Image (cartoon, helix red, strand yellow):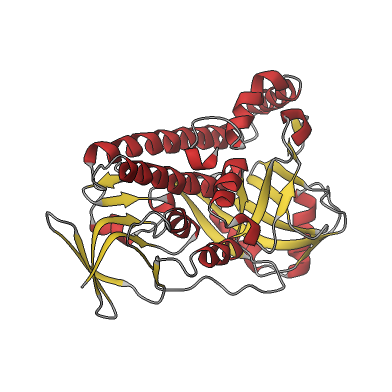
Length: 396
């Protein structure tokens, strides 16, 4: 039986970021996942994330950021409502920032994080799956499907929205269906994106164009009622291109689909406990939110940064790694952050749904006021961009 201090289940961005942040801590760490990240190809991956300034700082500190072979900064954001006077734009200069964030392909970030773990003490078990889990007073015993046994003091669930560990430990989950699916794809546009992230709100849901590393490449995230999303995912490419450009008010000219179309059902999830005995939930295993503000990956990476800071502090102070009081402080911090974003996203979704004239007036007036009241909204934007707020030490 292998004796460990920390077993991280899930080799996605969040789990690997935690392992990387702790690779020089002296802790005995293993990462368990049943599959490797997708291969890097010349074509962009379909799944991307909008990473804010705090995530960039954290990934830079652990050495992953310079290893990203492709990433695209955006220095401006434009948001508007279709068939309305509602419109809002902001650029990095107004917030005294060099940029507002980056669009990064998920698999490239996973590969960069794996590279930081090469020649480190962290053990990567990336073709293994947990078969059974049992807990005793000293720790947790894991049996893998290759019959290897692991003993760990702490078990980290970074195994995604449908976390098997969360289910196995019977952690209560609050959830509600957004009654939408997100259609994600890569498109080529006739006009260059000019390093601006754009989003239009329609009665059916928001459509975002996120700039990629080539001037005319964008990743789209189109949130729609499930049946409409399925129709768009299966319609002929020419029809899809036409409907996409029209919905986007032809802001970047005609569009050409460059990848497969992937549908992601949208559900809000919130684990009522992030810490239960020796299990800690991270990232999507702990919470999922609507993608309209692009904060899901940032929320998960800040979970990893906060937990790494917490565990390093326990080591420095000679406190047991599984000290309940310390872990509860971490839990309260991250739960508060998740609840805040869940409430914010629900509020935005409710406000921007439907075509009631009063709602449209409120939306239009609100956007206009925001555009002309930058000093008032700057703190809110700063928090969303990861430039302000209660951040982990490793993300400041």
